Amino acid sequence: MMQIARTAPAKSAGAQRWAVLPFLEIGALVVALVLPLLLQDYLTVFATRVLILAIFAVSFDLVWGYAGIMSFGQALFFGAGGYGAALLARDLDVVSMLLILPAGIIIGLVFALFVGGFLLLGRHPASVIFVALGTLTGAYAADRLARGWYYLGGQNGIPSIPPMSLGSYDFTEGPAFYYFVLAILVVTYIGCRFLVRSQFGLALAGLRENEQRIAFFGYKVQHLKLIIFALGGAIAGLGGSLYAFHEGFVWPNILGVVISTQVVLYVLFGGSGTLIGAIIGAVVIEGVSFWLSDNYREIWPIILGGLLLLVILFRPSGLVSLLLSERERVGSFGRPPKGGHRGSS
Amino acid sequence: MALLEATGIVKSFGKLTALNDAGLVVSENEFHGLIGPNGSGKSTLMKCVAGAETPTAGAIRFAGNDITGLSPADRARAGMSLKFQITSVFPALTLYDNILLSLQADTSLFGLMLSRSRGALHDQVMTMLEQFRLVHRAHEAAATLSHGQQQWLEIAMALAARPRLLLLDEPTGGMSLEERRVTGDLLQPIKSHCSLVIVEHDLDFIRDICDRLTVLDQGQVLATGSVADIQANSKVQEVYLRRA
Ligand SMILES: Nc1ncnc2c1ncn2[C@@H]1O[C@H](COP(=O)(O)OP(=O)(O)OP(=O)(O)O)[C@@H](O)[C@H]1O
Ligand SMILES: [Mg+2]
Image 1 (tube, helix red, strand yellow):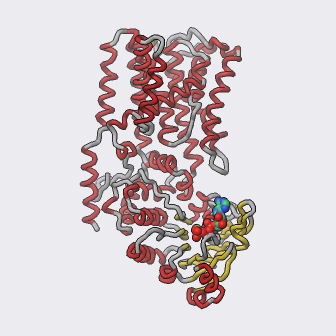
Image 2 (cartoon, rainbow over the protein chains, first blue to last red):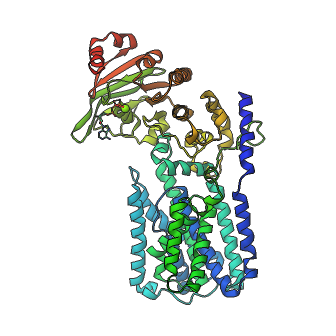
Image 3 (cartoon, chains in turn yellow, orange):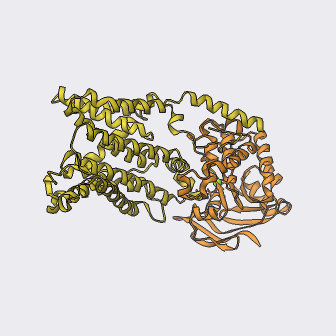
């Protein structure tokens, strides 16, 4: 028996040799690091915006791609973080990064706990449609509320948000802001990667594939869902607060259905259930839209739509599935004990 | 004292009464066969016991506690483990991870985030895979297994949590004769620490491994007793002859 057990790691080591994910990740990081050196300033501003949207995409991917929760109103948390940050700056003159970013995280978290508590808790598991419509309705209602509410600036939102500061340094848009957002994206990514590759990630995989079955193992399915939903909300809120300070204004659209749908497309297009896929999706969709809208002023939305359809039809697991095998996408969660003589991957 | 005592179980689906005052009593370390014609309510009774269905009426006691109102997760935590009639392994996950998923269910969520029990559970995962002759495929996706092997994996998952009561709904469906024999061998050793309720159409298999039997017919208990008693029971013979 021991001998049989020893053959296992050899096999998985073979599989490890072909792992492409680390290359993809390092490649993406290198490109992101050198990009501002190659781009004109106005393009660096655009790239910063895309990175913020990538943080947002990661938040949605955690909830949908990993846990299978159809959070189709994810912008509610992004927008809440954004409006929260804007109000802090406008009404309380708070612009310190050390307060703004935690505030964005907490606002996203609290909103998600509230919405998630309502939609996901209960004796019987909520149906997929109920959650999808519930979150969508939440985002729609928030959008309408913001439009009608004078305190939130109505249709125009909240303009002229001052720059975020750290000590005496002001982050205005440009390379410094870019690298700052990149650092936050990397930290978020590493944190999420740790989580989705942990035993908690295995529980999420079980949740995604067969929710009823893991309840029969004794998992507290509702708690599991609420935790990941809240975490997704917190990350979206963080992204929203960055967005508010980067753009210098917030408006009702960032809470609404359109940007909620956009983030679904990022993740679907890049590859759900891989964190790098969410980022690639955001970058490619935003990049292509930018380029198309410059070159084909009238018809670019049609071209983009066609492109999205093609990928979704022929690559339902997204762009990254061109490089990443299904096995590697799902991954392995078992590890041999530290210093153990027997092993698995 | 009995480990499991389900009494007066009624379950209606709209107008259809799937169970009509059915019951099931299982003692510690007993292998109990649940048999009966198609549609007699065997799966429904198992689901009521495990919490997958809520009985319309009746009471279920497990290890001395009334569990009638508990959720499936709480029943699992109390020591029950169910393999559904429909195979439900996690096809995209490796065999190793299928077992680990079952084993780690009682690690706290915080512990899971830090992967605290990953190392400690390794040996148990490997032991389960060895026991069920699946260890050489530990790192392949469960989807690559044959139907029979998937059933074994599911039994292994159900057993991994070291339940006090294992509920198996047609574990040998779709297995070859040889695979059935092996399944019987695999189940024997658990008797020292676990009771079993098993639904099976293969009466030879049931006879070989069970101590006692309960026969259901049209949602009611036709007879319950030792294997010999049931075999000698004329009402049971009639039901089986009528349907055969
Ligand atoms: N969810 C349901 N909704 C409606 N009717 C159901 C449901 N589940 C079971 N039934 C009905 O209840 C009766 C008993 O079904 P059950 O699955 O318990 O039988 P069984 O003894 O397990 O049969 P088999 O040997 O075919 O597995 C059947 O008439 C079935 O059609
Ligand atoms: Mg059945």
